[in-house]
View: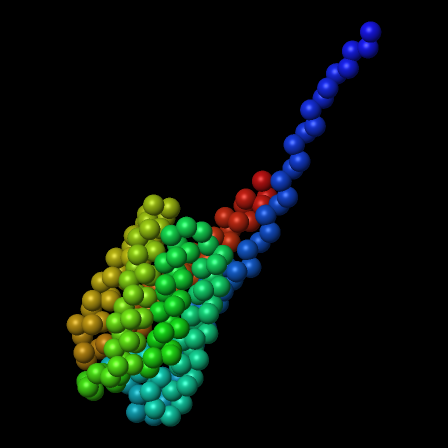
Length: 201
């Protein structure tokens, strides 16, 4: 009588997770957007960065540069969002759509009568975009309480200060979006590190 011993095959090892190259878009978008608007503001005759918003660079001759800047940043944010998961993916995608809309629908100059495209710029795209960016910081507080908590508090405070300060609106808005871009860059780095850590297990 022959006794057969059945030996279960060892489960196949899970292939290592590939680096998520989509996350690089989140690292590139902020510095690129910032460099472009700083250079534009520095060389635009009659433009006052302390008083005027970044969106106002899209007005007048040469305004197409800032329009393209908005569109490129929006596309990069959508690519970045595709590399994330859960609520962060959705909220950052809304931020990306807000940037695209801000480029397509040019703002009004501060103090001028509102136009339909200026209203769309502010209410349909910029406001939801900023709200989504604040929300994703708050969502991330569970993972990074100190960093995301402080970032969210600074971002929300600067948003209200920007809208309340006509004389220094441009300055406070630049601080506002710098906080946002810095937070997104750190998120991209940490998300990439988490992917690398999972692939090495």
